[in-house]
Image (cartoon, rainbow, N blue to C red; front, side):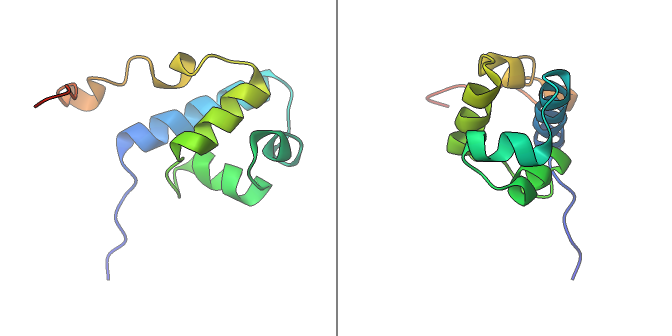
Length: 88
């Protein structure tokens, strides 16, 4: 069985989470409880081994005191993929 590669958007969001965590001087074990996840799950989000849920991302951005948009801005056309539009 072949394991699928993570989607490039999941990788990009995970990298942004890790960058924001490091910029804030937070460790995995220090940030995870404030973000409502355990440190292993946070690491999986950062490496895109698991997709971050919206509720997980919401907890992380609140714990880092960052706007949600800082993790998703610019991903509409990631790797040439068309932006998702409602109603289509």
